[in-house]
Every structure is written in structure tokens, then in C-alpha cells.
Length: 191
Image (cartoon, rainbow, N blue to C red; front, side, top):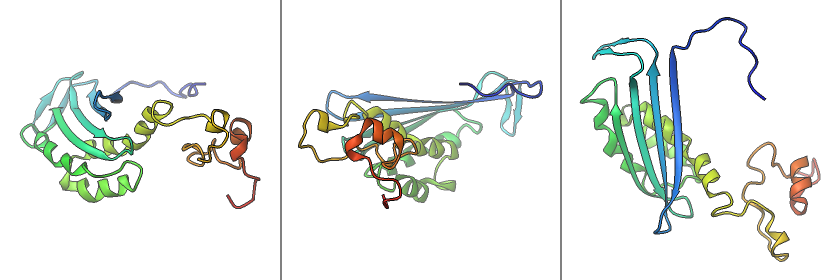
């Protein structure tokens, strides 16, 4: 399924691309390499000078290294293209403040407290906000089982991590009743 056909003729002016790649490391840790670019189609006049169309206004990288509990053990940020060279690209070291945070335990709130506003780069901080769900996707099946472990180990008593974390996998819903019947709750039973 795709979006509906636009109701009016349109012309592309700007592209923001976000790419996150997860790497399992030989030492048991994981790297999440996040990359964001902003590219204007036409030449853009900035306070710092002319930026030719097709060249990035922002070309930013953020790498975090996490353990199997999703605690950040290392972080670095690099700015390859910025609108204000010599200024924007000096904030990278501030992202070391992410070390010690856990992606699943209040991460977004702590991120804002440490790196919002002038304490960080708006774009890098925004990019960091999507790392928890990217990490969950990376860990699914590889680190955490995505099936009901009861089918493998009948005595298993741990509910699969993904249940009750999204609309489709709510324990009082049809998907859980079909694919994880042991964990299905009766609708309206207070789950």
C-alpha cells in the first residue's frame, strides 16, 4: 500500500534522509550508526554563504555503542556538512553525555535534559530520539527471541518483550491471540 496520489502538481524542494545501521561487534557489543542528511534541490543562500543545490546542508553522523541491556557504553558525533562551519561542527564531543543512559529506560527524557537547545545540535538530538526503536529492531530475533519461547521451552515464563509495546501486539488483541495465545488476555480484563 502506498500513499494516495497527490491532489496537485508538486515540485521537490528538500529531502531529509535518515539511515540507521546496526552492527553486532566481535566483542559482544553493538554499534548503531545513525546518519541524517538535508539536501535542497535549488541553490540556497545561507547567512554563511551560498550552498549549491544538491549538496547537503546537513550531513551528520551519530554512533552509539550499546551492550545487550541497551545501555550506552560509547557515543560519538561527527558533522561532515553544516550550515555554519566552525560552529555547528564543534558540538560532537557533547554527545559523550549519552554514555550510561539506557535506550529503554527514560532515554528520550534524559536526552532532552542533557542535549536539548543550545546544549546540543537540534538535528543530532532529533536523530538520537529514534535510536531506541532502531535498537529494538536490531535486537529482535538476534538478541531477543521474537517468537513465544514456550514453543521451544514449555516451562518458559517470560512474556515476549514486544507484547504490549504497540497497537498490533497488545495482549488483548487479535494478533496476540493468534500468534502468542499463551499471553492473550481477555479484552477488558484490565490488562
